[in-house]
Length: 131
Image 1 (cartoon, rainbow, N blue to C red):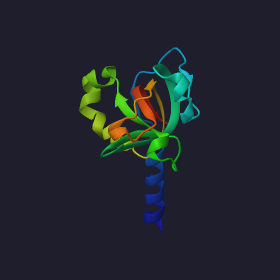
Image 2: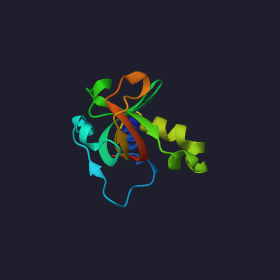
Image 3: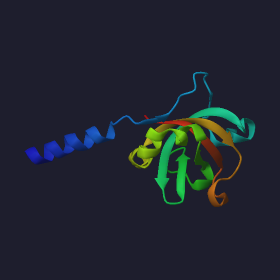
Image 4: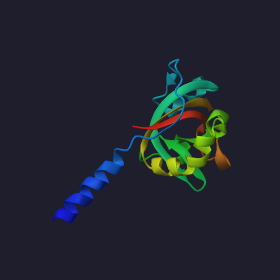
């Protein structure tokens, strides 16, 4: 019984881990609530929440757990995120920890349909953090 309780405590503490990469924009970016807003927001700095996938040929933000790729945004990483040596050395571990989690991202969105033209658009992120 004690082992099961300890396992549950450890498991629940892992899910509450706060993880952040990049810099938040001090100017409030436009919040995206619907993927269909891309038409009017192309090339603008935005903020959105969704489920992050960091998987083989699927690095994307999904609006919810049931979303398909056509309702998701392919993720590119802004040069400011990948030029920082601390981020470079730990980024895979951090991004793997964020896989499947609800995150908040900030970045520049465009209508480019991402990897293999499977996505609704692309977001070049400057910040990602767990919710």
